[in-house]
Image (cartoon, rainbow, N blue to C red; front, top):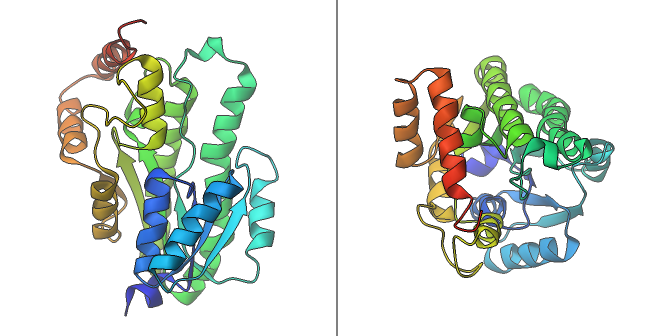
Amino acid sequence: MTFANKYGPWALVAGASDGVGAAFAAGLAERGVNVVLLARRQAVLDQVAAEIESRTSAQTRTLAIDLAKPDATSAIAAATSDLEIGFLVYCAGADPNYEPFLSNPIEDAEAMVQRNCMVPMQLCHHFAPAMVERGSGGIVIFGSGAGLAGGPNMVAYGASKAFDMIFAEALWAELHGKGVDVLGLILGKTNTPALRELEHSRGNIASPDEVPAGAAAVEDVIGEAFANLTNGPTWMVGEDMRAALQMMAALTRKQIVELFTATAAAAMGPDR
């Protein structure tokens, strides 16, 4: 069975405007799967769609939807009701603030939970039944090393990514025997526009175009993702992440949280 036959004819990629999401969408198109590109910014989505269509034979559709809104899932379902979605990628929900929990209004945390927990759960519940009925399909949910333990400045974000990891693992347990590949990808520091903006705001890099120290290349992340679609339920991306997980196995939970706390303090930059 070809990749497109197993995972097509259409894929939905949430968070497809740039970085890892856009690269994953391009990788799907290169493998013969049509892609629905979902993010907030219509103009940027149009650019990604144009680039994909110029380099591949895949069709594209763009959906400019704010995933933090309560009606996001119903809007997505309506906009894709005429498509056969064989692959779902959820790569949305980064936290650009990196500030203490009490420094922001509670609505910010609630929006994070909506975007990172409620919507991927709702989308899986909506699209997975047809995959199970066909006996083929794929679901990839992007997680983060921030979800492996609690740490300051990412209280709601880290908690939401812990949810994503366990949700993907549990979904894998239910669906992988029915022909649906489910994979939770746990990313570490990755060279995306969002990370570069954050690191620049901290004073850690001189320009948003500079690559942050220790950041993995997007193409390497995507390469590992496609190579391990059938190696669920969870895949730690990059040697650094896999080494960190091994190190954490020798520590108590308190020690891990203390380590995350020290790392957060070091990451704040010279002026903070």
